[in-house]
Amino acid sequence: MSDSLAMLENASYTWTEDSVRRIITASSLAKSTFYYVQEIGYFKTFYPYFTERKNLNSFLILYTISGRGFLQYHGEESVLTANTCILLDCMEHHKYSVDQDETWEFLWVHFNGSNARGYYDLFLKEGICLSTLKNSDLFRTSFETLFSIWEARNKTTEILASNLLTELLTTLLLQNSSTTEEERYIPEYIQKIGKEIEQRFREDLSLSYFEKKYNRNRFAIEKEFKKYMGIPVTESVILARISHAKELLKYSDATICEITFEIGMNHVSHFINLFKAREHMTPLSYRREWRNE
Image (cartoon, rainbow, N blue to C red):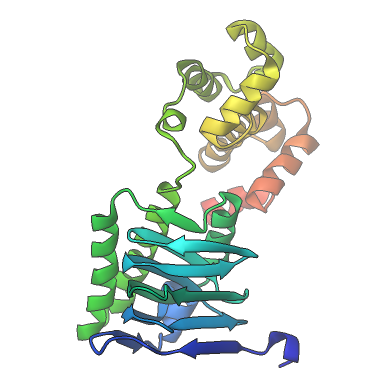
């Protein structure tokens, strides 16, 4: 291993006697299939507790129960108080420590998995590192259940652990503090556009069409549609067309050319390229796979 990827860890292990740390060795099945626990614990720390690390192939969820800690990550310092939670990529340099004047109590889990990197990248995209939980009781219960199932490990433990990790990650995504109540309300005209795309995807549902129909600027429509629906108007139309094309590929004998025109497109090559870009296979390969041909 090169020096640039060498594991770095410095720490001061000052915590109370009732603190607990459990190291878990995951099975090969768990490592290849699930989210899996590497280490999990409960710490009640006091000064000068700190942990500093880099180049550890792991992700860390740390939930503060009480007290106050400090986090240095991505060139910024954050204060960790009760009901806050962080998600870290332990390959990147980070340091967390207790406040000099009080104790810091927290639950934590190191985990990994085949799609852990993708989940973490989604958090980065959403700008989430530190979250203040609105339903901390539910989150804490899931965390404590995750901790307790290892006390009586059996053949279902790793499956349950993967499910609980997914619940924790999903809760953190939904708890994105940048999403306000106003943003959760989808304007009626955006809902109508989404419904119209679903029902009339074969037609030319361009931004110009919606601009005229709803008497709104096309750029404002595009911005709001993406804000509330997660994708641009054009992409929504494409996905609706591809979804119908998949139905025809599975349950009809229509040719690729016939399907192209049936879903409202004029060029077979364009349809094939759009399909491949989203499904990573050609329409014909999709038909063969789903028909077991």
